[in-house]
Image 1: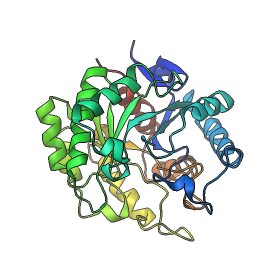
Image 2: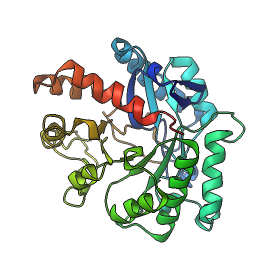
Image 3: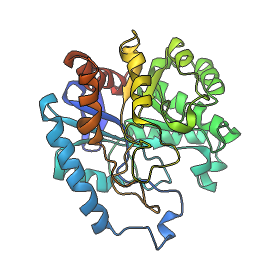
Image 4: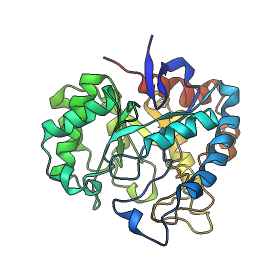
Length: 321
C-alpha cells in the first residue's frame, strides 16, 4: 500500500483526499524573526491560520479529506511541532518539507556543507524525523536563487535532494522553474525519474518567457501551476502577479490539450506570513472560491478536476522506494 509522510505519521495515499500541493503555513526569510514590525507572536499566527485551515477542510469534504503540503524549507520559519498542533486541531493532513527554498535562503552552516552532508540531513528528516518532533518530511524542497540563475550551492542542494529522493522514495518540488537545464542534467546523472519532480511556479508573472514548460513536460517532469490567486486584479498585487485570465488560459492549454497528467495545481498561499506583510486577500481557499468554478465554466469536467487535485498528487506524494 502506497503511503505518504504527514506530520502526524504516514498515511495511505488514498486517504489524502483533496491536495493543495504547494502552500505555506508561515514563510519568512532567515533572520525575519528579528523584524519587530512584521514578526508575529505564536498567538497571532494561530489566530490567523486556524480559520483558513478549517475553511479549507470544509471545502475539501466532497473529496473525502484535506491535505496541505507545506513548502517551507529549513531556515524559513518551518515549525513542525506547530504543524502537528494545527493538524490535530483542524483535521487537515499536513505534509512537511525538508530542503531549502533556494540556496540564498540557506544559513552559512548549510551554505558551506558538502553534498554528502546535505544528503544525510535530508534523509534523516525523511526517515527519522525533523528535530525532536518525530515527524518525517514527505517531500524535498529545492530552488533557484534570486537572479533566476542556478548558483553553485543550488546545484549542490539539487544533487543532494536527488540522492535523498532515490534513497527514501519521496518526491521533490522546486521554487521556480527557470534555468532548469542544469537541474535536469543533475537529475539524469543521479538516475532520478523526472516524474518525481514538480517544477514549480511555472505560471507566475515574472517567470513568463523564462520557463521552457512544455519542454520540461516533454522530458517527463511535472509542471507546477501553483501561484493561482496572485492576480494583478488584487488591490495590492505582488510583483510576481499575473492577469487572472492569462494564467487560467495557460493552465487550460495543458488540461484541455492532452497534457493534464503533467500538471499539479496550488495557490502558494501563506497562512501567516513571517517577517513580511504578505499578500492580503489571498488564501489557499482561492482554489475553491475562484479556480475550480472557473475550470467548470471553461468546460472541465468533475473527473478531470478530481484527477488534478486528488489522483495525480496522491501518486506524486507516495513513497516510491
